[in-house]
Every structure is written in C-alpha cells, then in structure tokens.
Image (cartoon, rainbow, N blue to C red; front, side, top):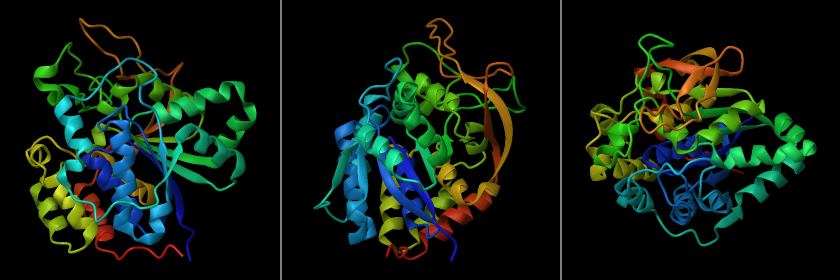
Amino acid sequence: MKQRTKVIIDTDVDFDDYMAIVYLMQNPEVEVIAISVTGCGAVHLNKGVANVANLLTLFGKDALSLPVLRGAKAPMRYSNVFPADVRTGADDHYAAEFPGINPTPQIHDAQTWLRDFFLNNDDKVTLLSIGGGTNFGNLFLTTQSDDVLKQKILSGLEQIVMMGGNLLPRYISPGAMGNIEPTLGDNIIYRNTVAEWNIFVDPLGAQTMFEFGVPIRLIALNATNDVPLDQSFVDDLKAINTPQAQFLSAVLAYPSNAAGIGTYLSFWDPLAACTITDPSLVTTDIYKLIVWQELDEEDDQSASLVVDTLNGAPIEVAVAASKDAVYAEFLRVLSLPLPDTK
C-alpha cells in the first residue's frame, strides 16, 4: 500500500480554505497531521481556531484529536487586512453548520508545537500554505539563532505547496494582475493592482518562506485564473450526498460567496491542495523571485512578485491549470468514503 503523504495545513479559514481542508481530510492518499490557524487573513484568530476544531466533527471520532495550532494575530510587516464583511463571513463559518461541537479540541500554541514537532520527528511532511506566510515566517525567523532547529526543519519539511502571488504581464504572457481591489471595493485606501491577497497580508512572511531553502511550489493566480468557480461545479458538488460535500455546498451558498460563483471566484486554495497528490494538474516553470516589500501610497507595488535573477529564490510557479481535470479530481475525492485512519 502506498504510503500516505503527511501534510500540515496552514490556513486563514476562508471559504476556499474549507474546500482545501475537506479535500485533504477526505483524501485516502493524505494524512493531515496538524492544522495551524492564522488570524492575519480572512478569519479572526479565536474564531478560526474554534471553527477548525469544530470542522473536525465532519470526519469522525478519530479526527477530533487532530492538533489545531493557534498562530499569529498580526503579520510580520504592515497591517493589511480583509474588509470587515469578509471577516464577518469567515468568523461565522459562512452560516454552514458543523455536525457538532468538538468535545475534546487539541489546541496548541503554533510556534511551540511546530518547534517541538520538527525537533522530535523524523517524518517527511508537506506544508500546504493557504493563509499567508506569517506562522511559518515566524518559525523560520527563529532558526536564525537555532541552527539545530533549522537543519531539522530543512530535513523534515519535504516541500511547501503555497497558494499565493501572481506573475505580472511583464514577466509572462498573458500574465495575471492582482486580486486586491475587487475584494476591497469602496474600502480602497491606496491603489494596489499587482498583489495577491495571501502575500499582500504579510509580504515579509512570504519572503521569509521563499528564502528559507525548502522547495516551494507556488500556485499563482496565473494558474487559478484557469479554474474559475463555476455553477456547474457547484451543482455537481451539491449532488454528492455526503456530510462533507453538503457542508461545502452550504459554505458556497453564503450570499457573498454565491455572488462570486461564475464571476470573480476561483479555485484558489483547493487547487493548491489538489496538486499535493497530483502535480500534473498544473503547468509550472522555475522563476527566481523576491516579494516586493516597499509600500508606496501613490503607486503601491508592495507584495508583488519580482523576477530577480541575481537575488531571487528559485520557486516552482504554477502558470496554468486544467479546469476539467481539477474539477474531476476534487469531485472524485469528495465522493469517496472517509479514509480509514486506523
């Protein structure tokens, strides 16, 4: 029997994070060993931790003790946040009902748990980063004064699959612009047309992850734009009569999410999750990248990806994806029975 891929999920518990988490928890080829939560993105930290702990009730008794890691409240740089209405929806888990309240949530401090895990565990693990770079950026930063921890993380963390960023038209044709302004709407303080949300929330966190030395597959907007969230997918998902599929259908039926079906929503985080077991779903190329850090309120380029052949870190970037294949893979896994965890 093929060994299951061990995965740590780092999430800001947005609607598409639920899709990614459920897909991986349902996938018999994957063993999720911990879920770390950041309060720097869509959800507030306390709500996000509680929501993830209660989400585990979808997956049977054995899942209730999965470690839920309480991460950062603030990013490493700047204070970029989602609009209040987005955060309210995420906090309220988009009015989708959990099967129950987790009676035995195993909640840990993220930095303490992650440090102990890497120091005391020799398993190879994959990180799915779908909530910005703050939690692991902070972890990686601590290794500047702890070489033992750094070497243990470098040997234990096999790869990072990260949803984030975009390659602009000046680097690739057709290229992809950012996705900040469509979400902000009337809340725009200064214009930024070039950044993607996960990296915009904490550009220093993302840069710290880029520089650390673990191989990264970056699922950029260039690829996720090829997989819009269409009504046909929503209908097919709703037709799957399992608690997991019905929960996700309820999340997608939340008014602000439903309004984006077939218009501006894409398969952001679930595409990243799907590539963990099937990298062929995306087309990739290697770019040497830095995350632009400087904020300019007149012409803001902060959090944009800059190709820098001298100083950039080599990153495998997903630049295209197969919509039909991605839909088929996601729906296939959601149609499976829960994997045997014993």
